[in-house]
Each structure stands twice: as C-alpha cells, then as structure tokens.
Length: 236
Image (cartoon, rainbow, N blue to C red; front, side):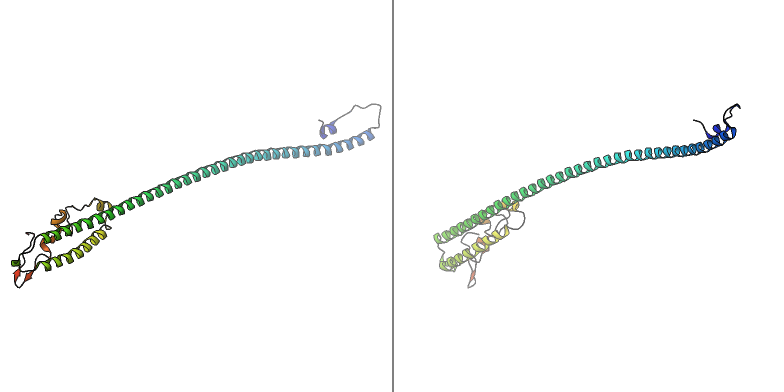
C-alpha cells in the first residue's frame, strides 16, 4: 500500500501533456486526502487490534467464569449429596439407638415385673412358712401339757403364744416384704428362706444362722412368777 510520503516523492518525466501547475495542484489534493485516509485507516486498525485484544480477554474471562460456574455447581451438588447422605446416616443411627433404648426398657420392665412376681411369691412362701412354724409350736404346746410345778398355767402360756404368733407373723412378713424392695433385685431373688443370714423366725424355724431365736428369746417361753423362773418347754 502506498503511503503519503510515496505520493509526495513521486517524480514524473517532463514532456508534452497536461499543464504541470494543474497536475501538481491536483496531486497535492490527492496526497492530502490520501494522508487523511491513511491516518484514519491506521486509527481504525489500532482500534480493531484493541477491540480484538479486549474480545480475547472477555472470551478468556467468560471461559474462566463458565469453568468456575461448572465447578461451583459440581461442588454444590456434591455438598448437597454429602449432606443428604450424612442426614440419612444420622437418622438411621438415631432410629437404631431409639429402638435399642426401647428394647432395653422393655427388657428392664420385664425383668422388674419378674422380680416383683418373685418377691410376691417369696412373701407368700414366707408367710406360709411362718404360719406353719407357729402352728407347729401351737400343736407342740397343745400336745405337751405344762407341769404345775413350772409355776404357770398352760392357758396363760397358750394365750400369750397365740398373741405373739399373730403379731410376730404380721411384723416379720411385713419387714421381709418391705426389705425386699431395698438394694439389688437380683440379690433379693437369690435370697431364700434358709439363707445363712437368718430371719425373724430364728434358728429353730428355717435354719438361719444369725436370726433371733423365738423359742429362747421370746417372753412367751420364759418369765418370772413369784420369784420362780419359768422353764422353757422346748429344752433351750
């Protein structure tokens, strides 16, 4: 492409033809117009380059934004999925724990109910055994009349024995029943009427080693009348 300088420096040979003055004047106009067009073209070229660079920059930015957006969407989906999975695990774990707690509570309730049934049965057995003991003592007294030399009438002893039997039966049974609710239920269930710890009925009843002896300690069987000691009819 010709430049304005090329047009200004162009020389033509002299000869017959157009008037030189007119040609030079027109040529000057052409140079001036071409110079303006050349500058305008250069400016437009620079603008095109600038716009092209800007376009490349914006396209690069757009590409980065698209990648960032895709990555953000992917991360959001993964986060949502992870949160959902975690919530599901927590829910399942909570259900399992709740079921375990309910099951343990039911088992504990069943164990307590069984323990209560055992305690009730022990109470009934204890009362029956104590009544049987008292009945055996009553039968013994009835079958073994007291000698007048002992210094006491048989009717008095029998009356006191009956009163003591009724009171002792109620107190001992109630104490045993109430005491069964203290401490470990398992320990209570392991306790029997013939345990080494003894009972209110004493050694002569259920075979206890440490209980009070009804036949030796009770005022039913020993008393003083007129300075005479009453002899225990049971031989203790």
